[in-house]
Image (cartoon, rainbow, N blue to C red; front, side, top):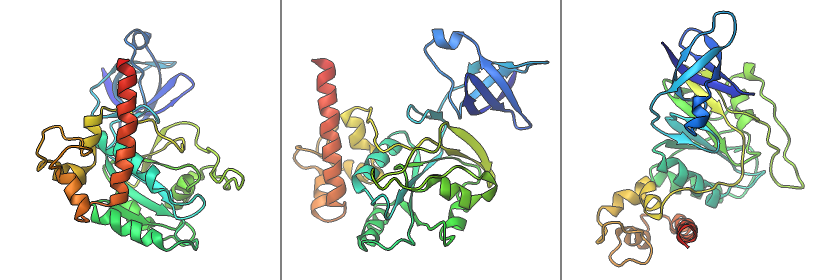
Length: 291
């Protein structure tokens, strides 16, 4: 039995890299019966084809999997947000961070288009996220700023590149490796965001690691329990060990160490307010499920 990793899924075919070559395979019908679908990033067992397509036989254990975009076994995520065009969005970034950290994926914040003049408040935000323990890389594809720093973090990692539509994900990848020549589009001035240029998930070998360019999207559906959200942010969770009540949601509970950290300026008040907004959304979803 051969083993490998799915590096592309397209039109019913799965392309599996066994470390030497990539094999085109179809999936057995049993996956539909088991209600599980192979996704890019999956480690699998497969049977090579002699003169035609091979067959994907088994999906091996996953350490994590995202539903949108569909990709598994991710080590880290580059969350690409632009300084301008579209404007930097802290609420959307905090939503991405909640989702990514919930799946135990290391987030790396990339601020693109730093060559464009804009509100200097971006520097305050960059410092706040760095103070919270996040890696923040400032980039400009035009000026080649931050590109070498990103290249160094790909080695031996599976990296997903995602973020708000129109922030320059494909442009960033082209700056990292010009041979990729990925399609890019101009910002739609009428919509204030970019058109979706990436149409499927694919893992590419880049700087001794795998990099995924994923379809862009500008909204996220949070699918987790409220208590999972309370434990997702790494910096919130560090303080949560000192909360009086086990299972504290850092909302209305007394003697909450996270709320105390906010009052003392150790946690950004804006990030905490974003968390409360998302927590409310999750609570309402949970109530509807049990109605």
